Length: 352
Image (cartoon, rainbow, N blue to C red; front, side):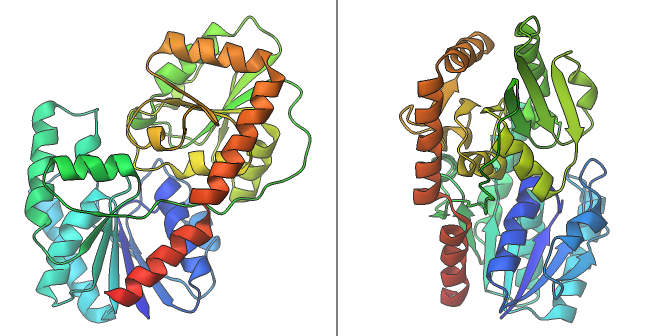
């Protein structure tokens, strides 16, 4: 089966998601038509992680924000590429690809289309309410086009239902390297992702500053981005982008995963942390709130003070940390492995 993946940024969690499909469904032919974002990991490093037979094509006109002129160029480019490739299935990743890609697929007569938003645009809190309403209307209009819309979390599925759009649910999953290695000497609180408004680095930094006088605790952010200068607490280490092997080395040596995100689909970085047996301390936002179950594996917080209190409690109670770490691993194995996720997509590809 020839599968054409179309994605505006081949970076971060979306890249992890597509990479797993290419690795686990290696008998299929995977072609990735992708955009590039300057704040992401080097694109050549990204490509080197994929199976050798994976094909890459640069979607030169792709960009995140709405621009009628640029989006029409992106649409025309997609139509040309789809006609050249003649895929059996088109899999669209992220909102921009999901909108433009469905129009292009219809114009080319391709009916086997899947759209996985991985954090729908109307969930964004960094834009005005009016702009979110516009995003909702665009999603409603494009939902009439051929294609299955796949929510990656129950929260995302519920939000789609609230605006009258039916979706199927397939949880994101992540392949994890669980290593038996020593923990860092200091109690280490880690996050992983683009340093952007969505990930709320300001709050992460403020939480770190609250603990700056405690010499036995440190914070770590794996990744980079336009807002990296916000992360300036003296007890906060910025690692920059790391290879997947290096990421897992850090996660397995850390003690606690902290996400301050404002919205998510179902975050792959959080799932990877769960697979490494880390307790979770997550801002209570769409997507994040599907990773913590009844305080079995961590806590959801609504504000900075609550986050600081939960963190202090976990740091002081080793038995609770161990119990919640075991809870993360148990929940990961039950719901969020890469095999569970890719098996579901493999069946969906075949059923279209």
